Length: 201
Image 1 (cartoon, rainbow, N blue to C red):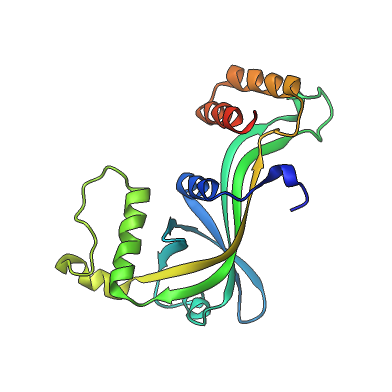
Image 2 (cartoon, rainbow, N blue to C red):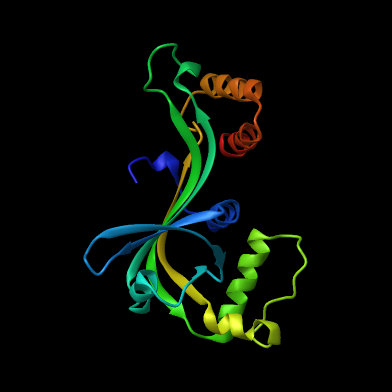
């Protein structure tokens, strides 16, 4: 990464971004040698990334061979319009965010218990507070679904986190941006103000 002041490498940061991001982006190389990015729901569990899909098709075929993959999680915070900084100059426009870039190896999960644990974790993340019978490898109502649903795992070999919250800017600049965010007042702006307060000390 070009800017060390944007870099984060602590596990807590990884977990936070993984919990806040609903969609991640899986990077694959097809058999034709073409780079492909696949958007999907995911969960981070047991130091790996899990997602589900069909037991057929290009993604399944690629991951069946345990290839090298990339995975991106990006938590989008506030968009800052250029006119907050200069009335006519477009270049200051930017997106504030927290993100994680992963390098690892992808594989198809065959173990029934691991599949059940992954799908249960996905449900807990994406449907919190809803009532449903827990997914286990012994629960009869799920046996057919577990057999027919593909579960995939990305084993994380390395990762790097990035924060873009104006932490490199002078305090006066940061305070001006916070003032603009308060004035606009969206829910994302409120989250951004909170995250700026945590990040900028």
